[in-house]
Length: 81
Image 1: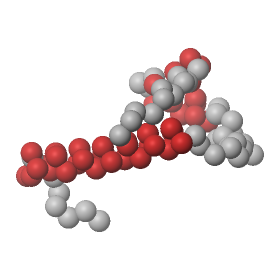
Image 2: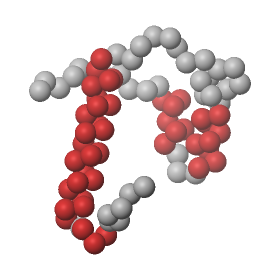
Image 3: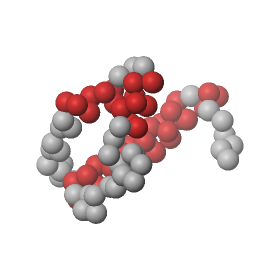
Image 4: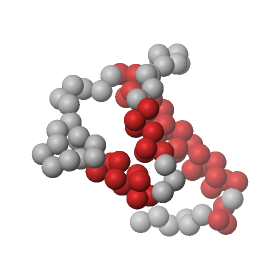
């Protein structure tokens, strides 16, 4: 499978999402236009590269979960609800 084209980096003002203090994260999120009262997300669909990367991330997460359960079977609950 061919790697998709690199995605553009988020603008630096979005770096507040990465702060350690949860209050700063919440404030940053509450200021986001999509979250504000009557905020709207754009109607444009996600680019195929974004969708493909989300799918790859989901599959990798499933793989990691299976691998961790195989490596550490006593550390994970066997019954998930």
